[in-house]
Image 1 (cartoon, rainbow, N blue to C red):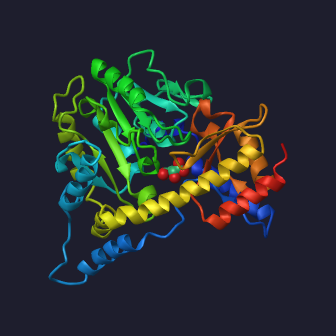
Image 2: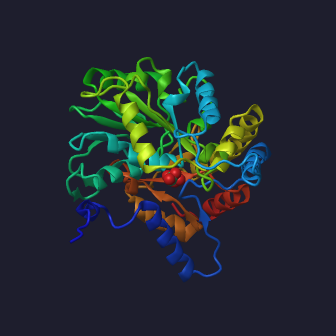
Image 3: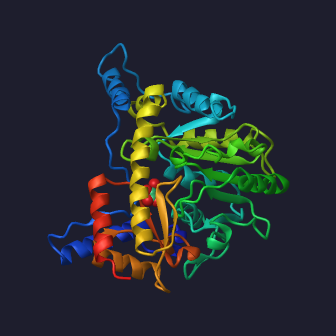
Length: 407
Ligand code: MLT
């Protein structure tokens, strides 16, 4: 008799962005003809630049000819792509072997799957608020108790708030896995080298492992801010890093990402090399690699021309962020992030709850945002606004907020 994974029953009924989409749809149904402006999910809108399209096209063309056709790829991803990724780190003074790079189909899948190489009884710490996948994947894996309100028993929530500039203090109790995201989704805060160093020291002393999500690193323009945790000495002994082409290269619908599992990474019962070997085993058992087409596109994205063209696109989104930020400040709202990150984190007016402000924004301005409460208890009282969007939609959102939002 087949039985189900009862851990699914602990989860809230749907994934946050599915919930938001449902509310948006209901509003559209009740208000036909109204243009809804989606600044909720961080989904790219601008076309992939020409050099990267050439790479993707080459990937397709290679499949059309018997001389260039190939089936399954190299097991950790195309060696040329892994070398190009390793070289991109070398430019920031970080050295790594190409075989410490694992190419995948997404940072979401990697950040959900990576927990599977750690012990069931691992104590998990997350920044609060956080991208929901870190918590939900551990709930599904059975590492938590039941949900109590908006938290799960067993997860250690590290509050990120205005008092600590949205970067958490070190955990007060011993934890085993620590998820950090910088530039942060959702708060848009970017960790400094000193802040990351404190966590690296903590992890090394306690043989904990940091899972560092750097999916938004391409949006950092301040040269003093680290784009990789490996810019901190000692991080290769205690941290896994996940990054993606989704937001930097418009690959949200193409799918391509990578994880770095250093060979020097160790844990309480794992000497250097063991976790690398385990992730290799996991990926080669359960994943057959990203498509050749997207990997050819990824290679083009890392070429000199690709980097320059993509920089123009990330700059476009950051200009959106500036327009939204200025509008919200004009309205007298308190706004964080949106400077080295494509997300703005906005304090709700008065004592208004996140979902209440979500509804107010939708009804008064037709702008869909993300309620902070959906990303952890410390997100209550905030909303996240994504700067991904066509300029015309952003300008319309700004006009609607200027004219329609009653505060
Ligand atoms: C977000 O809006 O947080 C992201 O787009 C979700 C994702 O990247 O999976």
